[in-house]
Each structure stands twice: as structure tokens, then as C-alpha cells.
Length: 395
Image 1 (cartoon, one colour):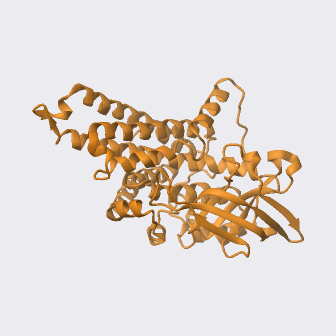
Image 2 (cartoon, rainbow, N blue to C red):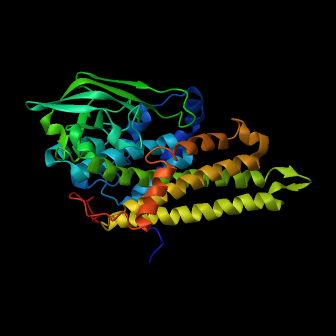
């Protein structure tokens, strides 16, 4: 078992770190003003990050899934808004098309997405449907060579800036979740409108919003998979999105840890650095434990993706653990900073706000707990999907 990163991994990590560092100076102001910059997303594409693990034949860099994790980690070390782009554009959308799309769909949509020329996102959640996916109300009625799509999506990252949306709606409500289908919807289609959500607790430097589909005519060629495959597609996409969330959370935890260590070695109380106080050391030691275990879980899941193994259980566990580690590290870092940690003068309050959301989106803590319990009790036993995520093949 090799725990070392390859030269290729080290190179992509350094590239991601350099890019994120160049963006870092503008993050605090964007967070305060609740603004985002589409130009930054396009630059991610120009630098090859958005297609990092997409095969070269579809416009990507052809790197492995560990590389996707490393980019996610380095991006979230600077700010969660950067990692979110990797999650929804690459993890939830592009890898979904790679896994389930037709060759025509891959050429038309996946190639420009991997090249960063078109921005994409994932539209599943609705005002009254989050963890309970079967409760979505969006419908897609067949009409000749098209589907007429109607409904509302909520809490969609990149809603106001994406060019295309991997959208889920019922083609046959009577079949329950087996009647959900998936579609590629372009912003240019008549009847598509979006808006932004303001005053979120965190990820304020990123765009989150809603989408309204008002009798949108979607070509039959934009149906992903078959009618009724939507639930399976949505869940397999979440295996990829959750992986990026988990890897990103390691980056956020490390940012909180680095800030805490730096502060503990400069701030003095009772005549010594606060790092000399055992209760401060205890908080930092817990950060170390959390980060180390989260990393192991994340890169085990990445390895399983590389060799083509089903990884729903392992990715869910990594997401559950890593997001809680990030949240706790941010909280403990604020405690170490004291009053300064509670102010905007230091970045740790932003880390705390950003970390909290990851324990909700792409499967709440409670959903991840249920997943692990069902595996442990033998109530869940994954069968191979009809469309497996392609195994990584070194070039």
C-alpha cells in the first residue's frame, strides 16, 4: 500500500495551490459583498482544472480522481466557493455525463465543459424536496420529439452563471422515484429563468440560487440515460460530488489548523505563547487527529474510483467525517483566536460559516449516518450500476 503522491499529483496540487493563492486576495471583499466572479470560473477552465479527471478524448486533462481531490482540497483551503465549482461543474455534472451520456451528448456538452468554455451545474433540490428526492415536483411531459419541462429548483450552486443544467423531473409520477428522468437543459432554452439567494450564512463569495422552468421545450436528444434512470443518475452523481466535498473539507480543516497554530505561536497570555497552554494544545491535537483520519478516508475513496470499484459507502463516510472535522476545526480555531476569531479581522469566522453548510448539502449528516447503518446491518448491498464511472487509465 503506497501512501505517497506521484509526481503528477504533486504537480497538479502545486498548480491548484498557485491558482487559488492568486484569487485569495479578492475573497474577503467578495464574501463581505456577497458577490461572485464568473471570470474566475472561466480561468479555472483555461487552466485545465474543470476537466482535471475527464479523459483527453473529451477535452479533459486525463488525470485521475485523486487529482480531482487534490484540486478540491487546495481550492477550499482558500475558500469554499472555489471548491463548489469543482463539485457542481465537474463532480455532479461532467462526471455524470461521462458516466451516463451518449456519445453525441459528450461531444456537444461534456467537451466544452471539460475545456471550461461552458459552465454547468446540477439541479435536483427543490423548495419542498431535499433529502427526500422522490418528493420533487418538476415534471417532464413527452410531446413529440421533445419534453415539456415545468418546475422549480432551489439551492442550486452556480444557478445564475451556469450555461447548462443537469436537471431531474418526473416523466411518470405513478412509478415513484423510478419515474424520475434526467435532462440537459440549456440556459438559452425559452422558459428558463434564474435568480440568486442572498444572506446565506456561508459561501457568500459563491453563487447559489433558484431555477424556474416554465414549460421549457427540451429536445428528446437531451434525455440522459433512459426514462426512469433519473434517480440512479442523481445518486451516482452524488458519489462524485460528495467526494469533492470531502476532499475540500480537508483543505478547509487545514486552513483552520494553520491559522490556529500561527496565532497560538504569536499571541501571549500570562507571559507565554498561548500554544504553551495545555488546553490550547488539546484543541490543536484534536485538529491533527481529525485531519489525518479525514485524509485517509478521502483518498481511500479516490483510490476506489481509480480502480473502478463502487464507492458509495466509502465516499459517504468520507463526506460525513471530513465535513464534521472541518466544522470542528473551524470552531476550535475561533476558540483559540478568542475575540479576534469572532471578528472579520481573521479568516477563521469565514471558515466556520463556510464549513457549516457542507454538513447539509449533498446529503446531511443524518443521511450519511443512515447510509452507514444500513450497510453495517446488511440492509443495503450495492449492485453494479448499468453505467459505471470509467476506471482511470494512465496515458
